[in-house]
Length: 142
Image 1 (cartoon, rainbow, N blue to C red):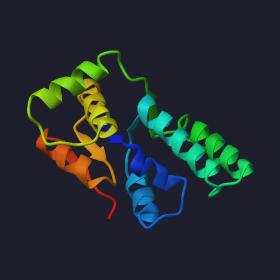
Image 2 (cartoon, helix red, strand yellow; image 1 turned 180 degrees about the horizontal axis):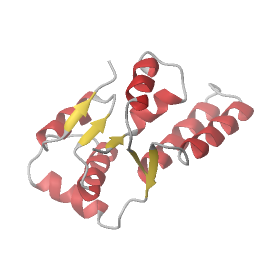
Image 3 (cartoon, rainbow, N blue to C red; image 1 turned 30 degrees about the vertical axis):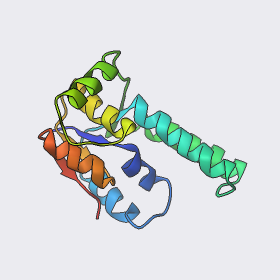
């Protein structure tokens, strides 16, 4: 069964953080991991942000972007473009009274719905709560 990885978890594979080792362990046990184009864009923005505030040199930011592009071509990762119905699905979730979460998190959950995925790897507690309310299985790398 495919696993959707959101940006908060994907970035753990590129930056040494508290949950990086556990995230790598979880990823290594999966045979099919979906990365949406939204996740890719958000990861690129986070790399750019770290470069802009001086956390990464230009060379290191370029290297991280290359690593991200390469990772998305490797098994078990599968890059999935977000469908045009993404916004409408997110709006439907909001209007149905599901638990509140931020806009990008809601878009990730809508992508999961449209991709017919039921498992989420995230490091975001609010998104995890909203995902559980939608009936998703949530894996937190802690």
